[in-house]
Structures are given as structure tokens and as C-alpha cells.
Length: 437
Image: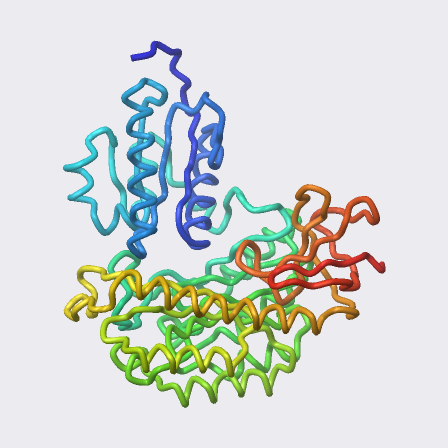
């Protein structure tokens, strides 16, 4: 073992999985900093004494990535490169007992609701006055904004309720206060996240209050874009579309996971809807909010998915022409309702079907992007990559959607600022632009 000097209170937070995990890591970092810890996110420095891994346990690939990451840091601990290793998050919530028995180098495992216990283990106080405050890991001009935790939906394939518990909304007043604090730090864009954002408010107020929340957030000075993610289609509240249409701060963008097109599959998935109802909902959205960009996610290879079921989904994607689309291969997750079904679609078939959908979506994206050539858009610039400033229109979320590229040799923009650009070229997933103001 290598001898080294103890580096007290130097913590590295490693985050895996979705934006909701990023948010949780940011809250943890904020608490640690308030307790005089020197905390960094995904640090490449070799001076971190303590490592905390915030894991994902959603599907098989994500679970494997989390396990591999834990094992890598367990080896680092064996080699004397770190002193303490802690694991938190969804994988730890779901498989704590198994992990404790198999990876003994980890000092302690914590679940998704164990923040106070984790802090206590680190001899840090949980500071209630910091609720809503955190250290951002994103560029300083945008932030993920979690409005609720947990999920009450019965989707057959999903283990999130096991890992995150029942739906629990954060009160509107607290969220508005949080938004004001972020705006005071220079945040211009809020990306609304939750396991199910359209269920917001039912537990607190007895009815859906997402539209009311959005209206209140629009009043926060300094916030210029508000982007809505993870909307559930069944029971989608129409008043959200009215707020989106009537307030320019709400991006004409909606992330709404639909999962499949076959009514037979949707019924087995326990989604509470049909192909016809879903199609009608998308058409209504496009009618009430002209120009809205709709992102969705689908599942390929769900148990019982036949060639005809897949063809129905493929044809539906072709006809609906979603602006943005991603697809997962089905993952057979224990303790879910679908685990009782036979996982009867071969792995290669799942992969091939997902690839076919993405090839189709690539063609659709190219077609839609080429229609933007010659048009002028407001763009928020996030970063520099190579020779380009890289930004996004209101129709794009970071990391998963299209990017706007402006050549640094021809124009200058400030990162974190908005600029008007003209699209001069387009490919499947990028728009090439020049600054016009």
C-alpha cells in the first residue's frame, strides 16, 4: 500500500445516471461545503481523500456502469489512493444488502433518502437553512430544477417507485424561493425535472398545480427560459399548454416519454392510455402550441412485442415526426410487474429494433433541421468545443438534443449569454449558424 498524507475533508462526488441524480449530488455538495468540506464534482485530481458515488439503478446498462465505477474506486482504496469510499443513490437504495456483501471495500452504503445519515457519517451537520441551495455542477447559466420526488405511477417495467418512493411535491412557495436564489447566482434557464412532472401538486393541493407553478416561476426576475421535462401523457393537464403558449419564458419544448405506440404494448406496460389517445394528445399539443418541439423516449423489445407491434411503433414514429427521440432496449427488472412476464425478445432483436428506430429518427431530424436553414433563432451559448461556440435554441435541452455551432473565427459570443443567429447549414443533429446580433 502506498503511504500518503491524510487529506482531511477533501471529497470527490461522482454522479451517474439522470439529471435528478445530478440535482441530488449538487444538494449534497452544498451541504458539505457549508460544513467546511473541500468538495469537487468528478474531480480528476489525486488529492481527494473521500469519494462518494451517486449511483443509478434504472436499467441493466446503468446498473453495470454503477457497479464498474464502484469497483474501480474500491481498487483505488485498496491501493491507498483514497481513504474512504461511500455509495449512495438508486442502485444503493435497491441493492444495499447485496452490495454490502460483495464489495466490502465500501465504507457504507446509503439510499436515496439518506442524506442526513450520510452527512452524519461524515461528521457534518444537516443544515435545514440550506434547503433549496446547492453547488451547481452545470454551467452557471442553467440549472436542473427538481419540483418533486418519487412516483405513484404503476408502469410495469419501471423500478423508480422502488428506489425513489411515492410522489412528493415541493411547495410552490419554496420552489419560487429556490428559483430566486438561483437567479441571483446568474442562472437564466431552469430545467424542470421530476419523476413525473405533470403529477405535481396532487399530494399537496388535491389537484394538479404544474401550470400554477410555471406561472409563478415566470415572475422570477432573471429567469429567461423554463424548460419542462418528464411529463407523463395520461391525464396531461391542458392548462400547462395554455401557460406555455401565453408566456414567452416557457420554452416551446416538452419532454414526454411515451414508451410505445401499440395499444397492446401500452396496456401491458400499464400506461393507462392507447395509441389513439396518445396520437390525439400530440396533435392537441401541436395545435395549442404551434411550433412546439416534442421529445419522447420509447422502449424496444418489451415482453411479448411482436414483429407487428414493432412495425406499428416504427410506422407511428415515421408519421408523428417527433422533433427529438431516444429509445431504450427493454431491461428485465426484478420486483417490477413486467418481471412476471417472459423476457422473450432476444437481445439482438431488441438492439436491431432500437437501431431501426434511431435510423428513422435520424432521417426525420435531418428533414426538420433543414427546414430551419435561413431562419433566425435566439440561442443560449453553453460552451466552446474546438473551433466552435456551442449553444442551444429553446427547442433543445443540454446533452440530449441538437446543438447550434458558431465558428469562433467568424463571430464572438459570451458563454452564458443569448444571441440571435441565422442558420446557414443543417445536418441530422447540429445546426451551423452565424451571429446576426
